[in-house]
Amino acid sequence: MSDASRTTAGILLLALVTVETGGLYLLSIVRGSAEVTPFQEKFARAGHAHAGVLLLLALICQVLADSTTQTGALNWLSRSGVAISALLMPGGFFFSSMGAGRTKPNKFIWMVFAGAALLALSLISLGVGLLTA
Image (cartoon, rainbow, N blue to C red; front, side):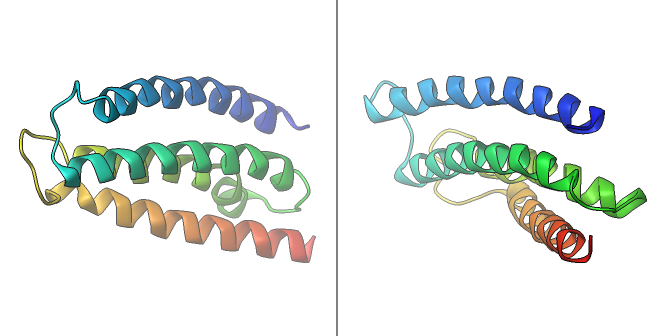
């Protein structure tokens, strides 16, 4: 495993602890001790699920990126893009649903779309990198 992959994987594993603590917030919603609207509950679930899945995918991408011959921006995109989308997309779900009684997303919804675009570009970059290595 390359040094870049090892370092990034360590950071990603530590970041998964934040997903675990986010699960405590979801439990408070489900148990009724946090007052949220149905919209906010759905966005909390979506944000939590995206965070966990994307962080795990970012871990897998570290090993796969080592198998490419990419350099420069493409290597960065293949190695780090999914990890950054794991911040953007869940952040968009959480930040766009903040506020008492909110029933629709606020302007922070742009983060979900930016994260989705970055995720797609990163996966395309890594996929092409693997196919051409």
